[in-house]
Image (cartoon, rainbow, N blue to C red; front, top):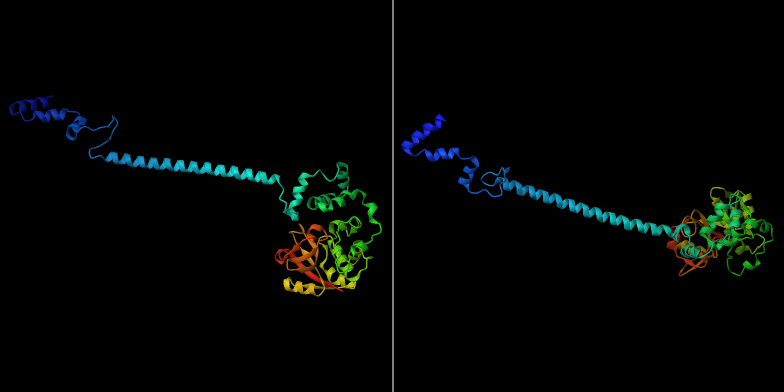
Length: 336
């Protein structure tokens, strides 16, 4: 108080210190207001200083916040799109899973469609009999992949009635044509081939029988006798079914000539032009899911003619070289 009174006494004499005293007594905020003008939007907690630096900081912060919100919206949009895409994909997979692809495992496309429309081929009691021994699963697989063998599978419970019956192949022989025989023919399909049945594993002996009948006309050599020949001479193997040596050593024992060929379209056509037949070992594809033998009997401008001992439908159409090439594992020419 003494200091203020001294200033007031001096001011009374000079009159020049009064404005200074009033300015010192003013709150600091009012001093700024008086000096720089009204500060708008500055609340009680505002730290805005003259010159507007805080405004710049706030603008930058708002921009960053906007960017963060934009990125968040983009991330959410992408997440929604991904979820929708996954849902659509899952639905398509479910639909596909309900329809077995017709071409899988060497199955003809029309077969899967027909199987859905037909009633079960085997009655329940016959299906039980089918699984009564070790061949049940193999026969069921054969039926699933090849409905042409339906009668063979259906009659399996009565197989003993067919095993020892006489076999007459005279109707299969026609001049200058290679007979088409099925390994699952009931006349021989239930007979043993090694520790299996001809109907399941006898494609090798059946192909050799077709060639042998064509060259010799000897109908006494049926697929049943050919299977015995191959097994007794060591050409059957439980892992692969038939050894490749059947087409060279085995053919020679039967009075035929067998020679291994390179995989070459021109060579194949040359052998066929010479009257020879070609045996092909094929892998998974149009003819098999594991391994198989087929017989090529001729060709023309549209492709090769094939005798497939497992499916007549394959034998009724022609096959171009490009289709066969990727499935052939080895091939041999057979002749007299």
